[in-house]
Length: 163
Image 1 (cartoon, rainbow, N blue to C red):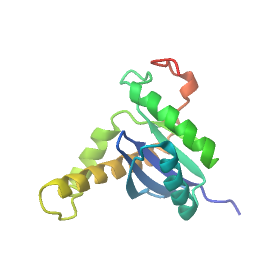
Image 2: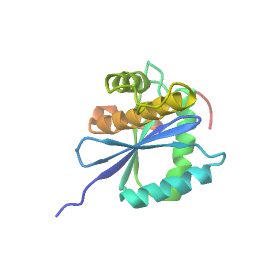
Image 3: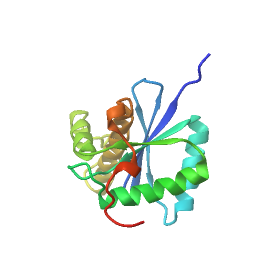
Image 4: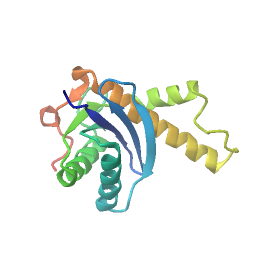
């Protein structure tokens, strides 16, 4: 009997982290959007709980690249964050090319009704919409994880700055 691959898709932003989960090649489902902590340890603690509850065996982390495929400044931030998270969680990870994922996620959420859940107009509705987009981006990362051509080896990319 082979064990399932349970992936956690991660769309990292400066303020929020979109999360989605998939088992083997099944359609991913949005899990949650978590607010970033002021310190990496807070992010790791919450991710550790999620990984334990969801029995995650692999992380699929979206890596923001420039349109020409080179590393972006946000990609550098993502790499530093991911290296720290993985060092503490001890869960294998893959990086996925997430160029245009925000646009694709926004389009998907728009087709699905906006992600506001019927909230009243205003900050609550905007927050729900942003959270839905973050989760949709994480779902897209998981969908793209099934395509090895979209896997990224950061060591093979031109870096924008020394780390």
